Structure formats: structure tokens, C-alpha cells
Image (cartoon, rainbow, N blue to C red; front, side, top):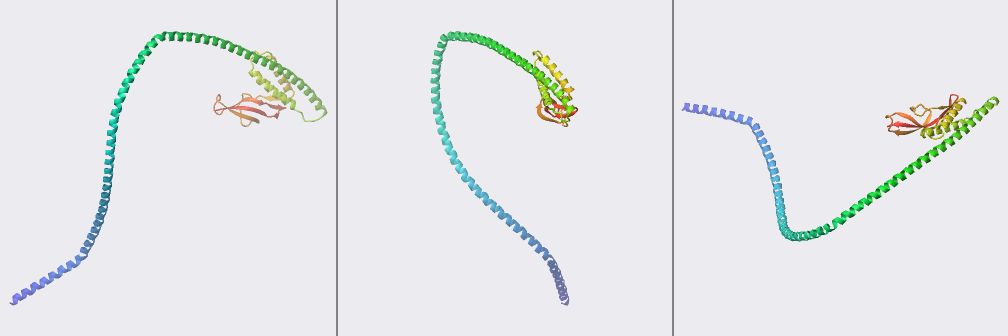
Length: 313
């Protein structure tokens, strides 16, 4: 009996110890279990939200499907109306085609009959038209030949008259320039004598107005000479007179600076007008015209040149 009681006590003590160890293990696992429960709740909440979103999307899709169904029904109604309209138009087309075919056939028959009538009329009148056309062409050719000959003759006469008039004007211009050169020479001689007298009697500043006028006239005459035909009457005499007056001009201490055809540079003391030219290289600048010449007296400039410069594009 004592042994049984002892065994019972030992067994009870060991059960109590085992129960305490299990309670201790459960106490330690409670936080882990709580954490797992919390995570599972979060996952449940997340799944609940996703489920709600899916339900919302499903509702929207359901509404969209209902809208599409309504539109589909309307489209079916419209299609039915169009089918009826097409059927009606097809019937009209068949009817119109039949009527049009009949009219085309009638028109063709009428046209064939009229063409036959025209062919018979053309056969009768064709010969007359050919004869009339040939006669018209011959008459027109004759008139054209006569008019061309008359126009050519008139053109030759006009060109001859223009040439004769130009020659006469050039000869008259040469005569006038020769007389002008004689007058200028006379004035230069008088001016030279007057200058000598003034040089002995007073120290007044020399008057260059006559010399400047002579220089301008010489440039003008030289420009006219370059444009005239060499066969113009009196041209050589005028050239000799201009050369003589230039020599007389130089003997009085004056100098006409030659610039025509020379290259222009920015340092020149001139008044320049610039004109574009396609005949020159790009950027090249050549003096192409003397409007007023540069005149020097005893090495000093008394008149600046006014020139025209061609600039290559």
C-alpha cells in the first residue's frame, strides 16, 4: 500500500512538472502566436480591400456591359433601318437602270440615224470644203508673203533712217564739241596771260573755276568719243583737239588724274556711288565711270573726284 502511494506521488509529481514545463513553453510562444494572428488579420484586411476593389470593378464592368447592350440594341435598330433603306434604293436602282437602258437604246438608234444623215451630207459637201480650205490657205500664204516683204522693207528703211539720224547727230555733236574746245583753248590762253599779269602785280589766290570747267568738259567729250563710231566725220580732229587742250591744261600746272578702269580702294578721297556687277569677281571693285574728275594744281588737289564703282557680286 505504501509502495502504491509512493508511486502515485511520484507519478503525480512528474505530471505536475511536465505540466509546468508545457505551460512555460506556451507562455513563450504566445507573442509569436499573437504576431502570427496580427499578420493574418492584416492579410485578411488586405484581401478584404482587394475583394472590395474587385467588386467595384465588377460593378463598373457590369454597368459598362449594360451600356454596351443598350448601344448594341440601338445599333441593331439603325442597321434594320439602313437595310430597309438599302432594299428600297436597290429597287429604285433596278427600276432606273431599266428605264435608262431603254432611253440609251432609243438615243443610240436616233444617233445612228442622224450620223447616217450627216455622213451623206458630208460626202456631198466635203469636196467643197477642201477646195475652200486650199483656196484660203493659198490666199493667206500670199498675203503673209506680201506683208512680210513689206514689213522687211519698212524695217530696213527705218533702220537706215535711224542709223543716218544717229550719224548726223554724232557729227553735229562732234562739230559742237570742236567749237567748244576752240573756245576753251582761247579761254585757257587768256587765263594764262591773265595769271602771268596777276603774278607780277599781286599775290591774290589763283582762280581755278575755268580750269575745273575745262576738266569737266574734257571728261564729257572723252566719254562721248568712246561711244561713237570711228568712221564719224570730224572724230579724229576732235580727239586731237582734246589731246591738245590736255597738253595746254598741263602746261598751266593742272593735272587730270586718270581713274577710269582702275581698282577702287577705301583710302581714295572721292565721292563714290556703288553699283552691283555680274561681270566682275566677287568683292572686286573697279571704277567704271567718272562723273567729275579729280583735278590737281601743282601737285595739290583742288577738286575731288565723283565716281561710279562697279562691285562684283
